[in-house]
Length: 129
Image (cartoon, rainbow, N blue to C red; front, side, top):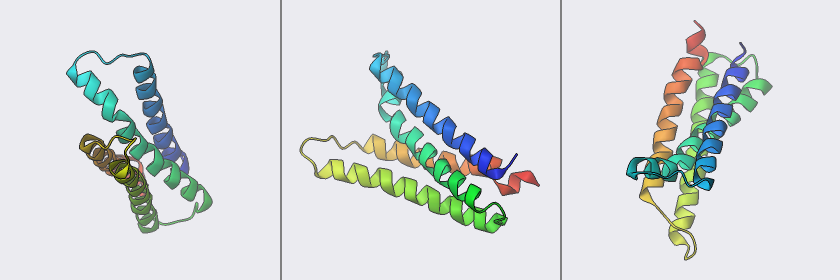
């Protein structure tokens, strides 16, 4: 399977998780403290994964002959863009009167980026050897 396909599927997995969390929110499935917490921070966690791998998948499709080190650099850049965008949005919320800033969302974003590193190790160019 092409690397761009693997990355795209990982991105779709993140989007599916984001959709599931939003569906759970809309149907008020927050029963118990743990589930309420997970549904609360889930969008940040899932978005970090989805954004990283969608960006990486698009790049990999455009650069199919890129070597392993180039793939790794592009992955790190994609993860940095994802993290910066989501953390930037949290900073905007901190400065707004109408939006709610939450440190738990920051931690969920960082956890999502950490999961991206694990997923990349499992499906990236080094996994094909």
